[in-house]
Length: 435
Image (cartoon, rainbow, N blue to C red; front, side, top):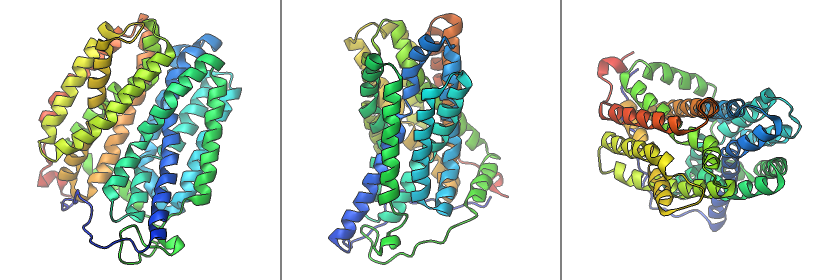
């Protein structure tokens, strides 16, 4: 693989103003519609954690069997994302996004009629996993890249936070609804919301400003709509095979496997039942998870600022070390009610939750140049692979040992390993990058 030049990290400079107020409004409206889709898809990521206890009580299924659906969902979410851009460029952003929301809605509605654990895996794991995998940062990047010249970074940041917003907005409400009405009415309601958003996407989203004869926001020249590409998926696979010949890729992927296992993998699926083991009400536990989400967004923003100023490798080492300490302390701070120590845990853990993303993006760009974003996409797939394994193994360990304590200890040790891995990351040599 030939050495590429580094990709600029800042928006392209421009001094021109938008062509018209109408054009400005159209671009922002497109961003709002895209954000609505990402918010809704994000709401489905935390639902499995609310379902483990109710499904275990209603059907007498093992927690590990229930968590397997969340595991499959996370893995497919991660491995769909690298190909989502190719599919959108081939078939159109609007069609793929509307179809993805429809797939999510169908998967959620079908759980109302399930009778076996394999059906939960099929409906929630496969259908919702594939649908939500199309509505990640790949989707956001395409929207901002086509519709915005000015404010691109702002819109990208807002859309990247939309998934967390879905968790923050819906999770406490869903936890309250599950507690009050059982699990089926909230899931069906959320599915109907997904159906409505699918319709909104189909009606109002547009693939490109040229579709409506407009300029991108802040652009000074008309941009023709690109022709459908057929080689994007092939390039995505080629970049993976080229990067896989370098040690840097395996260090980045290995760190992100651990990152996924120690964040959304264990927390989104097992936090509520783990807190329930300590006597905490599900609604209270969901509120704490939302608090973690608030500080995750703040931590990601702060981490981006720090990444511009400090060595990303050292930042990653600090983040993973702090995460290891918080997970190790978790069995001692969990209790039946909220207390100051638990709030401190939520704040510190939240600040380092998503903080690993900006340094890994920076390292990917520095090491692989123009291929860096695609390399990061595959690294993010490794993140979801770790998350899926952790969701399943964490619940299985709870079945075997009757407690999550061994899980927190093991994940803490894994974080310390990731901290050491971060310190030895280096740019691949010319020989490694050569074809």
